[in-house]
Image (cartoon, rainbow, N blue to C red; front, side):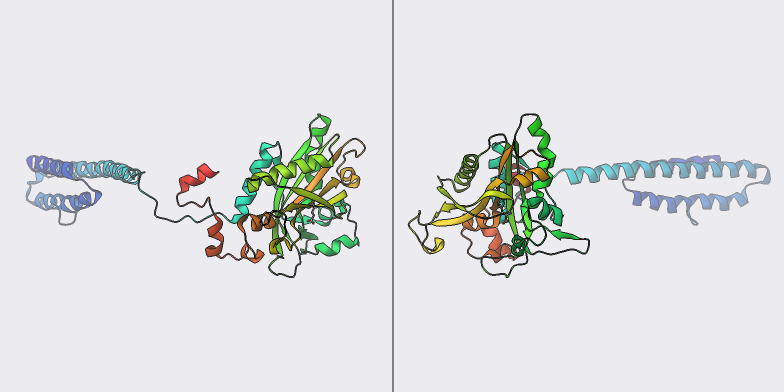
Length: 360
Ligand code: PHE
């Protein structure tokens, strides 16, 4: 029996060495340890062994069985490791030069204009602030010198939530928060300079020029001796960059309770150059950006001394700017979700994710 068990171990060792997959091992397990396998066959032979040698022969068979079982466990572990490694190598070995066939879509035209304007203001030392779309009566109106029952609220009816909150009607709703956030700048001798783009909501009758959901970009600058000429300078620089040409602006008086004096900033019509055309309704000017000097009550509400500091604020209509930039005649295109329309303005659209990191 000794020779037989040794021969069996040898045979198994040879066969297991040739196994290259876990499925091969399963075959070997059946062949050697199964009900009709080699070990079981030796057990049958035990009957023919004389009594005095039975015990030892049985031990030999058990030993061989144990040997095979251990070898199987070891081999399975080894093969699993090998198979995992092969899988890792297979997934890693892709060809980087292969063109990506998936179309990753395009940026929304408002995103494009917003990013461009952000870059310009960043280069002029402004920080870009984020502010939620849900706000409250205090921030949206009271802190902006619009008390309850003020007629200016009529133009800014919006969507009220059951929590006494509301969807912001203008980006000015963040003025108080941002002024408070940065007022320590002033004590340290630095100006407050921030822009805060955002989505705004109003209860509007929708047509080609009006939407209930639109984008603005608010900007504020506060310091000692800030005047209207600073405001005009920043607006002119930004617009000339966006349109890539020298832009002529003018100010008309405009009323907003949170600025004093308040203005409507117009730009000279880019289509006719100021001579008058259908786009500018023959006036030669296009209304673009309400603005003004921050009202002393607004500064006081943020804990800033209006005797010492002054500042300007503007509310750039991003949706209006995108319409002018891309020649979009109907505002409803922007919220339409119509990819055929929206993707065509995208000079920076990308079909390869690597372009996105360049863009960002
Ligand atoms: N928040 C005003 C609006 O949406 C615009 C504005 C902003 C006016 C800043 C003056 C200064 O109508």
